[in-house]
Length: 496
Length: 101
Image (cartoon, rainbow over all chains, first blue to last red; front, top):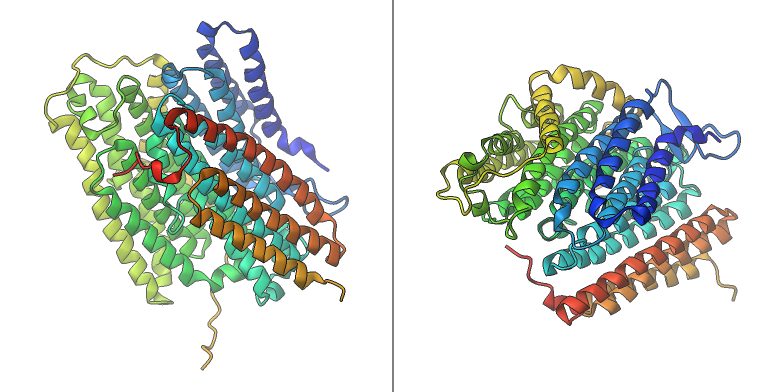
């Protein structure tokens, strides 16, 4: 029993409860300050509370067992820092946006912290039970965060859609966990990994695993569980959309990495064609559907589907290089998407619509915001020297060696290249609107507070840092995936 | 005849399929929500059956997690459906079509 490992999670939970309690004594006009307190608290935890994982340590296992429900390793620490940084930036964004909420400003901050808590637990998951609890903590808090603008019909509609589809995905996952437990006799990742040679031929276990993967695919919005993403992204308040795009997706990614490469690497290798097909379809679906979109948030929803496909390239690569490229890509995605949504939430805080034409003339109105949004769109499209370019390059590079083993990988590479080309078209549509989009509805410059400027600065520095000096993060991401054990598929003779 | 593990699993799979059918086929949000609960309880039944026949209590602990989570989900979900009804005077999925292209 080693509960000192989860000290960061305990602090975040206390911070969330503290914000809820402080709300009782805080006059209504001062409640936005709670957002600064929450963001500051997270910053303190980020700089003080994080320790390097010198060695793999487990918590909450059976007495004397060399394993446990919760694991602290380099991968978990990397993702915990990722989630804390995302939480800080999202809280800064939501303080700016909170003028739009009729009531419950401090509840919004505290629910954001609880969603963050779920993500932190997801980063250290080593057991299907903890995976379920962490994912549900994320899903249920997000249902509330999505439908937070109760006075807007679209927000409630998005919330109901997320609720029904999210609960369906959870039900699949729970049933899958039941089947996995029944056939393996345990829910611990290490114990399943030890028994996977025999489990690989157990149909009940395989069906259970498929159901679990379906639940995780919903979280990262991969085909065929992607239908919710555009609607929910469009209807939610901008900071929620940003947290969904970054935090919730990254939680799905870290769980996917742990399940596929820590619990069942042999079965993952057998199923590589499935991951190739899903990755290719997800990239093509997201890219093609994004073309006709007029709503910027909806566009980001389709972009998020396409990016889930790019991330799955790393899974299809079946190698440590692929996993390292995934976490590089998602780190770049954090800075890029949060920069975009910070600008979006400043622009949308004034207007009701989020049509692309809202951004007309932003280049003259607020050159600074327009420049940041341009950088982030260019990074999403994969223009060098920005984070998105290096991320996509590393992912494609990790898939290339596999092309010699199976021709389907050539199709995947082709789909990825087509996706990149299409994405340049729709991301640059936003840039075109900002600089050559005709007259703006309003001409006065947008007010940005200094914390927003700071958040934008962090995002821009992050994008350029990951684009220009990729080695610095590669040196972190490569050892981070050492705990994963991907395997290559064994050539099996096809039965006649 | 003594019912064995396969019988419980068959009932559980049947419950799960019925729940899924309800979510897909029914158009009232409340009925869809009930069907979702049915799917969760199918998983509970499977877990308890596996625990009982494999002499391993971990599955029963998991059931407590699921019941708790389901309760939280219902609290949030019903509140949301009530908010939707107040706003739109409807709880049918056909009327949830304002978000598209």
